Length: 75
Ligand SMILES: [Zn+2]
Image (tube, rainbow, N blue to C red):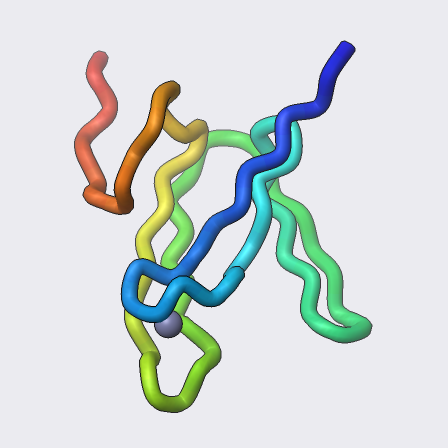
């Protein structure tokens, strides 16, 4: 059984914003840690003052490589 981990990086500056661990979004900043799973859309604003780019993430993430361009989930 392998746990898949993917890094979620800012599309503007490449800063690590969160991780996807086995399909769950995990945030870890200093003493703060949170994890979310299920089907949802997350909006994360980059924490770098010079960037502040809005990154939108859809879960579950569509399989395959994505380059940050959001695309609607097929139904
Ligand atoms: Zn950024």
